[in-house]
Length: 254
Image (cartoon, rainbow, N blue to C red):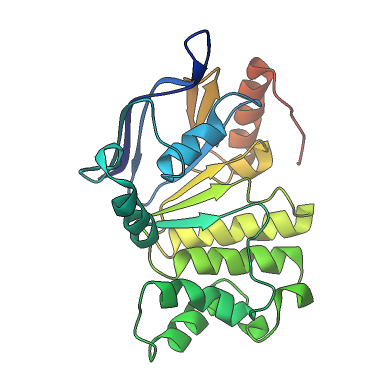
């Protein structure tokens, strides 16, 4: 079942005398339960695409459908409610509140959505155990590692059972060991918890954990790769080959 449908999306910046096409008639779909990556060189449009999907930015033309709902037709007040109820976010810089414990950071998303206060501690404990951070719930962000902070951010993104989790360079601030643990966590979120994930990344190793990769070039969809029935190493090497064609950075993590 198609959860997200991008139809002829264009995004232009500037005025008539100096127009920049950030996105140029982009079309793709994401099925419920998929883990999809978006890649491309700097300036390819991948961050703009994520911002439009997340409702942070608006399209110039075209349509974005969640299920059958066209969010490009929504007013700002409707978008805020839609975002809160349907989307989870994982950012590169964690976006945790230092004055709150890990438990409070995770539960904040439930409180904002007016969840039953009696149910909150149990729900937080359950998600924390799945993501391997149950033992640090009483600690503050400054007392834990970057990898643990990012798994806390994943728990916060998941706690409301959003339709779609949007991850923007989630491993960007992590060392290689923490990055791998996070990617394994996201894989678990996808496979065991059924989360639909869309991840923007420039890193081929991170992308190899997704099931499908969409490559953008100059604001257009350049190529699509599927990791189905391939080993992670095979998929990783295919991703590297496309990045070479795109003229992007490559790093051999294997």
